[in-house]
Amino acid sequence: MSDNTDDAPSPASDATTSAADQHSQDRAPVGALHVDEPGELIAAVPAMVGFVPQRSLVVAVLSSSPDREHAPIIDAVARFDLPPAFRPRHGLAAAYAQCVAQIFAAESATEVLAVIVDDRVREPRRTRGHSAGIGPWGRLIAAFARPLAQQEVFLAGAWEVGAIEAGQRWWSLLDANHRGALPDPATSMVTVAHVLAGRPIRRTRSELTDLLLPDTELAQQVAAHLDDALTLAQQRHTAAARHGDPDRCRRRALEVVLSQIANIDSGAALTAADCAELAAALRDRTVRDALFALAVGDHAAVAENLWIVLARALSGSDRADAATLLGYSAYIRGDGPLAGIALHAALDADPTHSMARLLEISLRTGMRPDTLRRLAHCGLGIAADLGIDLGPAIR
Image 1 (cartoon, rainbow, N blue to C red):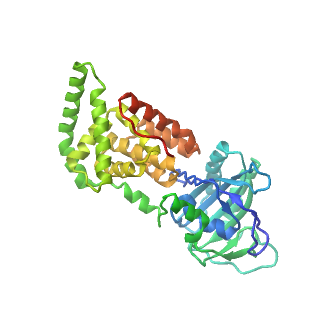
Image 2 (cartoon, one colour):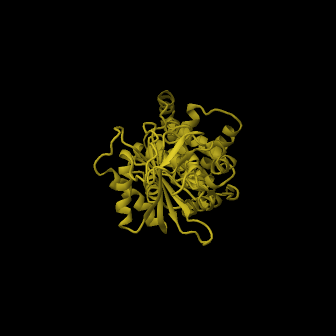
Image 3 (tube, helix red, strand yellow):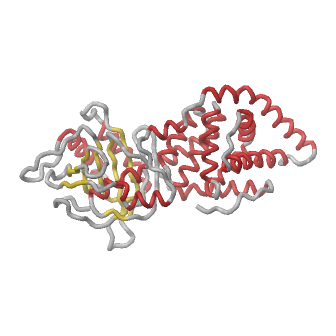
C-alpha cells in the first residue's frame, strides 16, 4: 500500500482478517476482499474488527500473496486500547509489538499497516519534507515498529484519524503531506460483504459486553429450580442405566436442547424452569460436546441466542458452559470480538473450564477458525452415536 503521494491509490489487498485488543483477543476472518487505498482500509476497519473502534491502535498483519500480481494479503487485524492519558505509557509499544508478534508466529507475515483512531487528534499542517513520527502517537508507532523490524517485519504504512465516519480526514504518520478524506464506511466493500454474510457490525465494543451481562433477577429464579432439575436428570440417568441404555437420558437431554432452540426460533421465551433444565442437560459433557456441532449448521444463529440467554441466567460452571458454546460458535463464523468476550466471561465464571481455556488460547495465538472445525465435526459424530441427526455442516 502506497504511503508517498496525496490520496494516491495503492495496489489492492486481499483481506482475510481477525481482530484483537490488549485485554482480550478477538479474531474475525472475513474472506478474500480488496482494499485499494488508505481511506478504504480505514473505512473497512469497523467491519474487520466487528465494531467501530474508538481511541484504538489497529494493526493489519500482511503476508505474501500466492499470486505475485497482487499486493500482500491482510491475514490479521489486531486492535489495542490507547491509554486514557494522551501520552504513551512506558513499554506500551513493546507490549503491542509482542502481541502482534504472536500473530506473526501463526502467519507467514512480511509487514504491517497501522491505524490510530483517536478523537483527541487534530490534522497536522502540511510541512516541507515527510515529518515522520508526528505527535505522541507518531512516536508510539515508531517505537512499535522498531522491535518488529528486528524480526524483519516492517511497517509499510501508518495513518491517523479522529473517527471512522464519512468525510473524516486521515493523514499519514510517516508523511504528514499524505492525507485524504474517508469514504462512507457503510459502503465499504468489506462492510457490504459482512452485511451480506449476516455478520453484525456494532457501534461500540460495549454493545458486545452488554450481551453477556448477568441477569440477576432471572438467575435467582433459575437457581430456585436448579436442584429439582438436577435431581430429575440424575433419576433419568439411573433409570436408563438400569435398563441397559445409558445413552437414553443423554439422547433425551440433547432433544430437550434442540426443542428449546426450535421454540426460540418460533419466538417463544424461555422460562426459569426451562433454563434450569437446560443447565442440567449441559452438565453432561457428552451432550455439551455434541452441541458444538450446531456452530456449523443451519441453526447456528438461533443456538447462539440460546447460549446468550443461558449465559446471562446461569452462574459458575453452568454460565461458563453456555458462554463457551457461544464463544466457539462466534469464533467459527468469524465474529472474533464476540468470541473473545464470551470466552472471557466463561473463564471469569469458571477459571478451571478447560474447553474455554483451550479456545481462549487458540484465539489469542491466532489459530484460524478452520482449524477448530474439527470440534464441530466431532460433535456431529457424538450426536449420531446418540441416534440424532444434527444435519449437514454448511459453514
